[in-house]
Length: 294
Image (cartoon, rainbow, N blue to C red; front, side, top):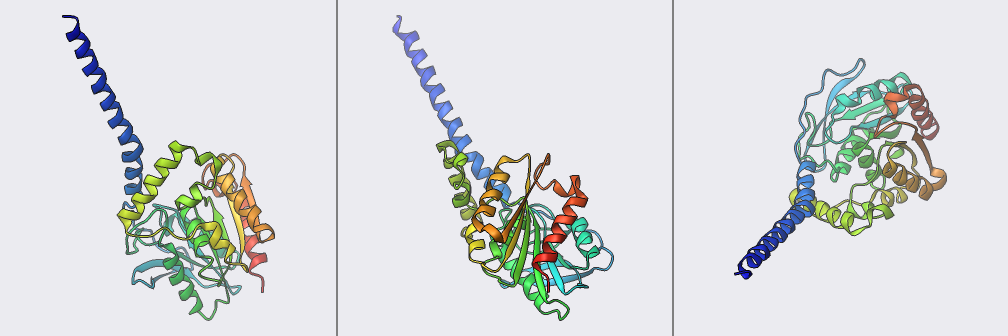
């Protein structure tokens, strides 16, 4: 008679173990797959009217995607490609565009593919962003008033520009605010991300992005920068984001004299401009003044 309660208890334990296993499976596989799906979720919001002195233009990428942008010609012969972060549009970069214009820089601020009013499939890791940068470079090269080209990107926009550095030597200077990583190899570059729990979920997420998007992971950012020996770089990292600091220190230390690093104190991801607008303007425009000097 006593064996029946024991059998029932064993069944309950076995059922609880199965349920726990399913829960762990959902957590470590379902969650990163869900994150991958979010990375490919469309982001559509129409920007407002162009800032004063800007005109609306349309670019076409090498794979036939139409991108919508704002353009202002330079007064000093140098133009900056301005790229927003994941889920953003050129509207979110309006204050940056106006800042650069005050200093005589031409600005080409675009909606990356799958964002804002641009065509194409979204990838919030920016895996196909180099094609968008290529269209921007081609547009600026077609303008007789542009002699030198730089880039300023926020978060994913910075990563897109850094990733395009090796393909477009015309990019002489790149300022990246909040750039970190966009592929598994980079994620595992930091020791803090190597434990099995982080390692496994990251592998699942990046593999899911590759399968769902049909795109192969791009060149790691640091490798791209190393293959652009004539370019100069400015990295802006949030002082309250340890991972961001670690990646940007790695970038700056590896590139040596070709790179500058500003760790903005007491700010979160891409918060330096809002908290320190004067310092931000001084550092960004000073960098371009030096790197894009005639």
